[in-house]
Image (cartoon, rainbow, N blue to C red):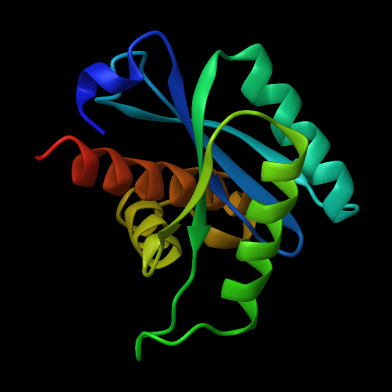
Length: 146
């Protein structure tokens, strides 16, 4: 995707988890990733519905789902869950949805908050949003040739 390909729309980054789903959104020109929100998981269907509502209300042109591939390169249970989320989203919206390797995003987010002196236990929502932001930033950099 060139930076012009996303003109007029934003990219939504989704860091899925079993309890919380972190969200980040790009600037309209697709160059900056910003933390957006956290969705509490009650059911997969409710998460899909909320992501679609947010994507529609924010003029999102693409949704990127974090795909936690194991260090070996194999897919584990969490990677299979992210693929399932991707499939459900594709069935629920016309917005293109794809998975993107999210290895180390949560670790990077935790380290960033630790460096700022923010205690992890009280900042789980921020970790999830920041992990989604790291994921989206990586995606934007990879697609804009940076």
